[in-house]
Length: 227
Image 1 (cartoon, rainbow, N blue to C red):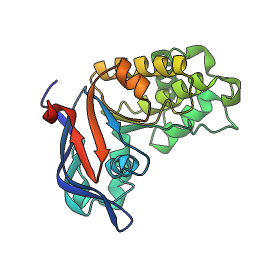
Image 2: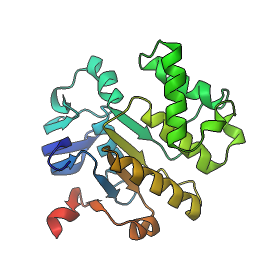
Image 3: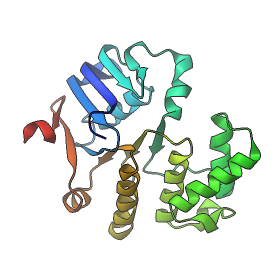
């Protein structure tokens, strides 16, 4: 498990527009690791995540994510990079006009799934992983916030990604539901997926300690190198 890096940066500078938000970033995240990304709003957390999934270009230094070189990434490679990643957002980003099944099917069709039998079977599989196999035909507005976030985690798992990027995934949830989502993500990381969990929630952080990357003053401090 250890020393099997899925995200690696060397001497990288992360930009937001023309402004550098993170300098001299050298970092390695391994398969199956659960890592927090902490920092105030505007500290560069989201810019780092966007660089990892190819939304912000890496102009300085080198970066590699699941075998894709970010510093020389071509636009046409971005969809293939994103198939290696699952992304969980704070606001769920479910399509409100279609059922849970159709939400998941939509993502699958967009990422190249064509066989309807395989689509059905995969949807059943990911919904059972998040404990919501009975909700296939339900509309998102009929679900609680915690259930909607579980569906977005199921969506992130569709393509069996090596990495899950969670951007404030508990930001809209109450403390009890946040804990449930946290435990679910920790379980998923134990199955060999790397999870990078950006959060403001210090209560969760203190309850479930793990390796931490702290964004401040244009730098990332890594708890493993501070110990």
